[in-house]
Length: 150
Image 1 (tube, rainbow, N blue to C red):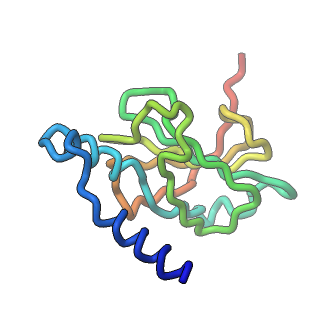
Image 2: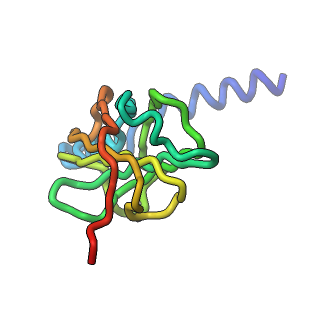
């Protein structure tokens, strides 16, 4: 009997109309903005760099930045990943909850011994451009970071 009540409650609740503020053209734009707050794809490691992967514990850090910004909107950290690595970065990975993953984006994928922000000498990395909502982004890690002499 409890299951029937639960099922009926769920059915009634799921059939409710959207609140009026989201039925307007402006409200629909807001909902669409929330729906596209993600980017999916795969990180591929260039065969030439496979021997340069750090031994032991390592991290894959994928940062998402809006075009023209140097501050990430979202970051995904993965400990000891296998490649190719499939990813999906969503609103739950945002640094500041009020920010949006929207418009043109720049993605950086980096393999490092440390899960910290910023490149370190010997990190392997690559870039890709995308649009919010893209589902087939390919990031090729094909470069080695070398610090410049001061």
